[in-house]
Image 1 (cartoon, rainbow, N blue to C red):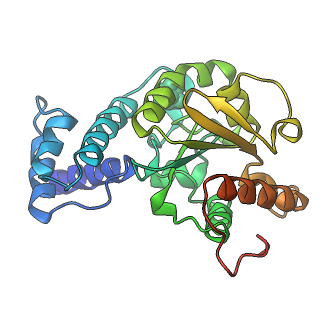
Image 2 (image 1 turned 180 degrees about the vertical axis):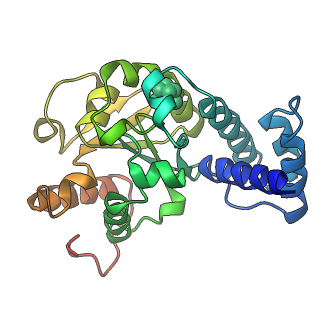
Image 3 (image 1 turned 60 degrees about the vertical axis):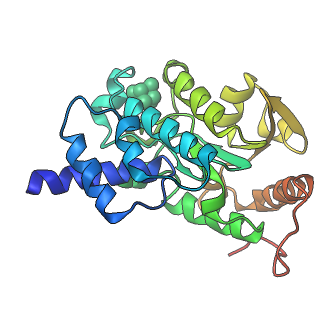
Length: 256
Ligand code: SF4
C-alpha cells in the first residue's frame, strides 16, 4: 500500500509539473495503478482522464506529460543525474501565451520538483502579479531540468545535453512570447555572448516566438543587485504593452 501511495504521489507531481492542474479522483487512482504496469505509457495513462472540453489542451497535456516522463529518466549529464533529487520539468498552462525561462533548478526546486519556488520564485511571483499575470496562466521552466550541485552555473555541455528537451517543450507550448530570465537563458536561447544590458529593451526572435531578455529574479535579491528592479519593471511593462494587456491599477513598482 505504501508503494502504491508513493507511486500515486510521484505521478501526480509529474503531472503537475507538466501543467496538469486537476484530475478526476477515480482517474488519478487508475493512472497510479497503471503506472505500476511497465507497459503503460504516460500518453496511455492520460487517456483515462476523459475529455477536458478543449482537444488542443488535452493534446498538449499528453505531449508534455510524455516528455516529462522522458526527462525524468534522463542520464545525459552524469554529474547532475547522480546528484539531483528529481528532475524539474516545468509548470503552468500548456496553452500559455508567454513562457518564462530561467537557468536551472536550485535547492528548493530540486526538493519540490517545481521551478521558481524558492526566494527568487517568490520575487518572480511578485513581478508577475504586479504585471497582471497569474502564475497559472503562464508557463515556467528552465534551461536545465536538473540542479547543478551547489547551484553552480550550468556547463555549456549540460545546456547542450538538455537543449532538445527544452526545444520540444517550447514546440508543444508554442508561446507567442518568451521571457529569458538571466544571462544563461539568453545565451542559450539566442546563442549570443552579449550582456543582458545590451540585449534587453527589445524583442529578439526565437523560432516563432518574440523573445525578451531581462534579469533573473535571483539577481534582484537583496544580497545581489536590487537596483536592477527598475530595469526589470521596464521590461515587464514593455511585454505587457506588446501583448495588448493592461497593467493592474495597483501597479506602480516591484518593490517589496
Ligand atoms: S540536465 Fe537535462 S540533459 Fe542533463 S541529465 Fe538533467 S534532464 Fe538530462
